[in-house]
Image (cartoon, rainbow, N blue to C red):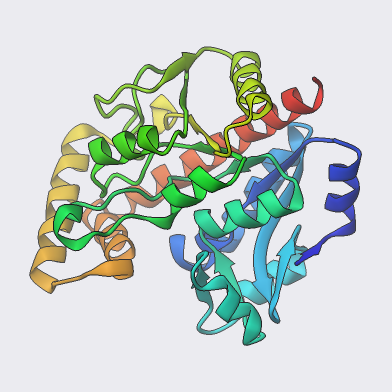
Length: 299
């Protein structure tokens, strides 16, 4: 693993740093949106007083704090692997290129000493997991790595009740920023309760600090709903989700292909509106993560 000099210096001096993933560049958003959004997120984090540390894999090296040139190389490389904790070693050993999922970014951020990470939505328990056993490694990573993850909930195509239940089982606290309910990614509420509502960044930071000081070996989920003005309308959300799920069943999509297939179908069914919502919540989460990192560094 290689940590950029700027990020290493900030960590050593206990200055605020926010980790960012690279899957959104190569798999999460269509190009050129992915690379453009990655730059926007770094600018948002920097404008709020924290240092962005985008994480990815180039030439068999996990890089923490990628340069613009490195991000462009990653975006333009053919066949970039989507690296998670079970595949990251193979990508590194082969000298390859890879974008980091939430789980892989958590691993690298924890190893580097970064305590705040901004993403769009975490993975979770898949629908029909009682049959397939399909549970995202994001949840396991949250149970293993002491990093606070700012997210607009879990991806809406998942089984949200079981996802929230498993987070509790794993001992990962879910803090709602200005909300009593776990967000549903494209929608602000799911009807599921968070562990604790916090109405300010100071309260969120104090709770995260207490969690890390008490010592449970887990991360923290900061549930930050998509901004009200950018929320997907309920009728559009319900019809697009139903169509995407039906298409996945008909196509027999399984395993790691399920989430990208469903998200692409959501994009098509909403005429691209889902991508606009995704961009809005990513920007909101980056801003909140930077403010949390600044508050933690000030303590």
